[in-house]
Length: 186
Image (cartoon, rainbow, N blue to C red):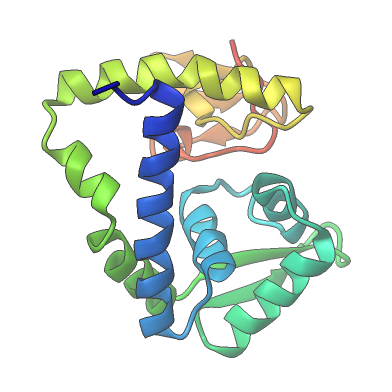
């Protein structure tokens, strides 16, 4: 019997994960796009919690994302706050109901459960193998990388202090672990 290729394995894992995500979302009254939006907003930083950034991350239209966010806000899964510097822009934040929904969906994710079976070193090795594949695909299609702040070319560290070299703003240790739309791979 022929083994599945890495591409086939990744596609099969993604299919299983999406199917379980859709089922969990249906139980919560959410569609897959709404769960994807909540997942992103849970992981992004303060520069990336806008509808425009979410549209870029999901490779979706701004109109579709706007409708997704309106539904999530109506259902009580997130709140929107106008930007203090630019009143045309809004920042989105999860409510406790939104975080609870994500926890329920995550607990049902078969891929996450399968990866938990691996040792931490194996998980890190797998991530290090997959990251260049992701970056290559993003570059080939002109997509933003949306990487974690501490892996960004703009990230500055001096002892235990962190700063964004792009904005000049100080960052907390927690900020350094969040996804940023301005991410530039080192």
